[in-house]
Image (tube, rainbow, N blue to C red; front, top):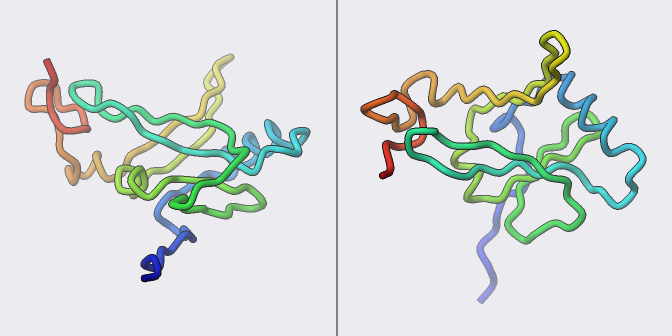
Length: 126
């Protein structure tokens, strides 16, 4: 029996600003073994979901990929459900420069939130 087909190409599930793409590209331009950037989530509870990034040197069977202006952004199939509607930006505020994740899904009330503090991610853990 063959494995079910799996759509690995992302289109608009994740949005990446031009400044974020440029910053990712500048970080990887001298690294020939880097295939792209992996986005992941962890946590939950009162702090909400925590977004993270790492460089990709090897892909996996259940990776989805967004090809954005020469940048490959990898997300595994499970993580993708937590990233729907997220926008990744790179912002400069004074001397601080950071990647910022804006979760539009949580802001519209579509995600579970904590009854005590209102944080997205599903509620308080003790």
